[in-house]
Structure formats: structure tokens, C-alpha cells
Image (cartoon, rainbow, N blue to C red; front, side, top):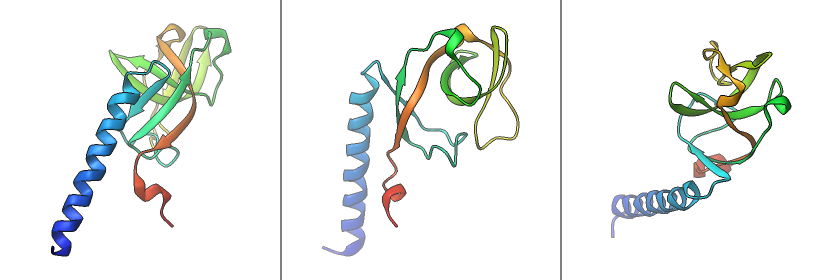
Length: 122
């Protein structure tokens, strides 16, 4: 078998494994997945994140949260809190998201793991 074909088969096997893992993990309520690049270099997508419920009074600046903005759940860092409003931004972005209500926060991100195998190669 030539090396190009072996590399293609290996890449497809890795892709299938990652997709299967994402499917199983996405069904668990404490885990969330993300594929965007807005949190790079802190989070290198695709990632799996472990989340826990957080009371609105316990949200703090610099927390990474999953928040619903315009119907889309995103994982971003809390940049500003003002009463019951908060503003988030991706670590890899210069601009902040629009203001959200603390009730729009789904959970606080406690830990995350990249599913990009190159993240673990020196």
C-alpha cells in the first residue's frame, strides 16, 4: 500500500473517531463541544468542555461561560459585569460580544480538552 493511501485511511479513521466521540459527549448534559476559533489560543478547536451550573450571582469577570447570544450558544470569557448584564468576548477577538443577561448563561466552563491531535505533539 502506498503512503498516500495509508495517510488517507489514517486521517479518515481519526475523523470517524472524533465524530463518534463528539456524538456521545454532546448527549451528556455536563459536556459541551465547540468548533470555532474565537477562544484561541486558550482553547484550540475542536474542544470538549466540562460545564457546571452557575448561579447568576456567582458569575465573575474572567470566567469562561457558555452563553446564549441571539439563539447561539457560545463559549467566551466574561469581560464585564454590570448588575444583571454581562459582556463576553473570545480570547482571540479584540471586540466584545453584545451585552447579555446573566440568565442567558448556560453554565461555567470548568475544564476543556482539545480534540485536535496536533495539540499533543511536540
